Length: 436
Image (cartoon, rainbow, N blue to C red):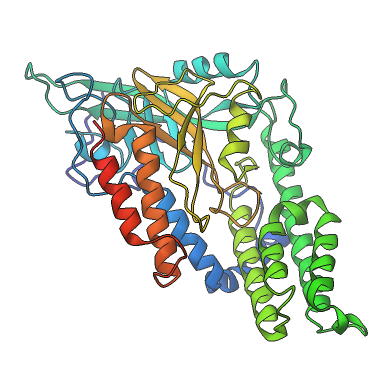
């Protein structure tokens, strides 16, 4: 016999009723990567660059927490669209979970989506021909959901066995860059193969960490004769040459190291430069520590424009910037964002649609500026959007995230970011509040 799990009486975000989760680590604690993780975690947690990055990540993944009252359906007089956990009369889901209107998909966290197995099959059928990403059916989880009473006085009740939706590389569709695929599981890989690929990925990060330490010691003049002459533009050239010597270096450290090299290529303030590279090293350790903790995740681009082409074939993406866009499975969302002269924030955003349930769509996304490197296991996320209420649409939510994120960037700059101010962001907020 099945019983209701009343979320108003003791349900919490950690609840896993009916879950068959295996939480064991694929590595024992005495492996090199586990030892390194413990060693580096203390350093990582105190890195100033890491703390700033974390604050921007938090903003990026809380776009719905705006405090704005949701507008009733702009397609009908009936309140429709996905539910949130807090809106359910009963249900063993977190308050901020999103549940599709037809109760077939549950998005619990950034990378945690559970779906009816038929929805996973439907997605793979649409994606397998052209998409680089398909889905593995993961752990089983039982949901006992009850919506709020409808106009006829009845409640919709669903007892459903869902399965975790796990992104995997599609062996039938090649990628232009072999690095992410070689370090990530394909859909038919066994658990042992998946574990080995993650181990190889971790080893490559550990090797880069030591390589990076040695390089920084050289270019900051802490070791070696003749190295101290690497000043100004010559320092810039040495940094660029080092990055090009290894694909992992280039993927993870290019942006941070080249920003430092450009800043000090003319103004050779050695003390400030050395402090900047030490901060970058701390951010790298934080990034590496997080990546170690994700053995079952795949490596994906940290860029929305690159990510969308892992879902939609090159030449097939579309730019429909309408508020009520409802893309097909394997297609994409797109929206333009206000540009500014200081080039702060994003100018646009893409999202590839990977699951559908009625008028609700689940996307697989990433974005620039949310991770240290150009590839990673922790930077991508799922999101659920609706098509029946303005505040649930892709366009409205992305614009709101853009505003929130840019406010944080302005605040970080002490309110003095060139050509971008809180008043401009207020104008943008006022504009999207009027969307109907």
